[in-house]
Structure formats: structure tokens, C-alpha cells
Length: 373
Image 1 (cartoon, rainbow, N blue to C red):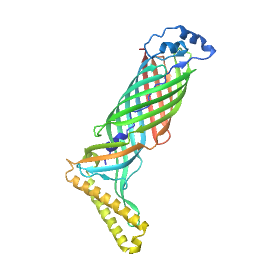
Image 2 (spheres, one colour; image 1 turned 90 degrees about the horizontal axis):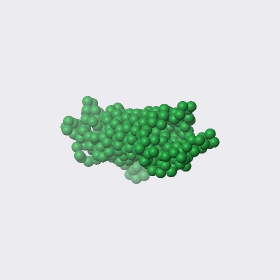
Image 3 (cartoon, rainbow, N blue to C red; image 1 turned 135 degrees about the vertical axis):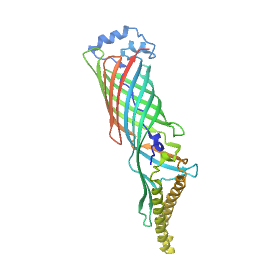
Image 4 (spheres, rainbow, N blue to C red; image 1 turned 90 degrees about the vertical axis):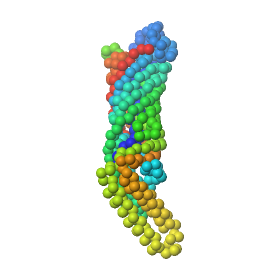
């Protein structure tokens, strides 16, 4: 099954926490007294940030107030899908939660983003995100039905990896504080990912706290920063869409899978009916047997309906369509990150970052150029 677009709203792709580690730093220490005194008497030459002159005169060293970053971000994240409803050719929608089971589905994405930013306030950076991504969705799932003994067996299976493209636009802000080269940054952004098969762009929110330290080199303006932190992702829960049947299922062997599935459903329904008919009237009133019977009939009816409807849609496969709705989330909201940035001078910086632990792995590399406004 080519289900890539069905869960494409899961993409965490471009809503990355991509704040470059520059910040307004409080100059402290006797050895830095000369620098601190020079800041108090120097004229601050730029319009941004607001109150930049006042803050500089209090002994804070400000970065250039504007910047442009180019970043490449890669991520592999395990996802959880629920409340899955599917219909064909604008017909009835069937809830498949009880009979469809997903096994370690992943979304992998590589995104190239451009991020312009400004320091609006001495301790607040705001930025935009524009990105293009190449993504791959890996899905393993099956349709399961019970028998008379309430043993569930698989009647159809699909496994796929499919590639597609997406475009992302986002906005973010980063409150920061720095004292003597130590700093705390609370990066947060929201993004909208546009994919043609979705009714509307998918929304995501990222929060990335970081705690770090900057170490100076002997050459003026050169330093290296290192940090640790977290990466938390929240995505909009509901996704609705419409796509051609050929994008939903591999048509080369679909008919055989549907025929085998329908045969298995019929076989299990016969077993359930025979088991129920073999019970005495007293046994048929037993709540345990009633619950088992109702569950089996409900699951078999659901599987039979979806397979029979799909069987009809395959007869006009070239013009058939699939309608779907679902809820989705990353398996783990948080993962751990470490990173480093080399500052060649106050204009030019290079950054790398890695995220791991939990069910999400990610890596980022970027270059930034800063200037005064």
C-alpha cells in the first residue's frame, strides 16, 4: 500500500528548532572590566534591538541585530496513528481502529530551510522559516479479524516506503539570557506544512530549550559554543484528505489480496456462527460469551465491509478515489539534543546538532551570516 500521503501530516520535517546560538551576554569579571567600560560609553549604531543602546550601556554585549541562516535538517521519527476512517468513491466511511494494526511506522525527512531573523528586543529573537523537504513514509500494517476463540489473525498485510515533497512556512521566537558566556535559550516555533493531498496544511509546534557555554579563542570575536537540551514536538491531531486509489494501494496484486481477505473473513464468520449456535441458551446469556460474540461480529463486519467496498472500487481503479481521516502523533514527544557552534567572527557562524534517545533521531548542520540593522 502506498500510504505515504495518508499520514503525510505527520511530517516533523521543517518545524525544526534552528536558533543559532548568539545572544546578548552580560560582561562580568575583573579581567573584562575594560570591555564593560567601553560598552558604557560607546554609541550603539543600530536601530535594533529596541533598547539596544540602554542595554549596551549597562554592560551587555549584543550580537548583530539581523541574520540569515541556511540549514539542512534530517529526521527519522516513529509515529502512532489512531481513529483511522477510510471510504472509497465518496461512499460511507469505515472506522478501522479495531481491525488495522500498525507496526513501527516511520516518517523520514530531509529538509533545506532558510531562516531570516532579527533581535526585536535584547533578549528576544524572532525569525521566519521557509523550507523544502524530501520525505519518505515507511508503513507496516495489517488487517486482523477474530475467530470463535477470540484469536485474532491477519487477513491482509501491507508494507511500503514512498517518497514525496513538501513545502513549509513557519514563525518562531527565542527568549535568551546570557551571563559571562553561559546562556539559556528557549526556542519555540510553529510551522505549516503544505502537501497537495491534504485538505489543509498540517500544523506543528516545536519547543527546544538549551543550556550552553561559549568559550573564547585568542583571536578576537572567535569562539565555540557547546550545549545540551531537549526537543519537543506537537502536531495537529486531525488529518483529512482525498487521493487516487492508485496512490493508496498497489494495484498489481490488490485483487488477490482482497479475494483472500474476503475468504478469510467468511471462514471466520462461519466459525463464530457455529460456536454461538453450539452454546446453550444459558451460555448465550453469559456476559463473557456475549462480549466475545459481539466483538467478533463487529470486527468481521467491519473487515468484510471495507474489503467488499474496496473490491468494488478495484473494478474502476483508474478513476476510483480514497477518502480518509485520522489522528496522529509522534510516539515520543521529547528527545535529547547536543550541539556546537563555531563563530569565525561576529558575522559568520557554523553549527551542528544531533538529537537522539526515544523514538526520534535527528541531525542538523547550518551556516549563518549576521549584520546590523
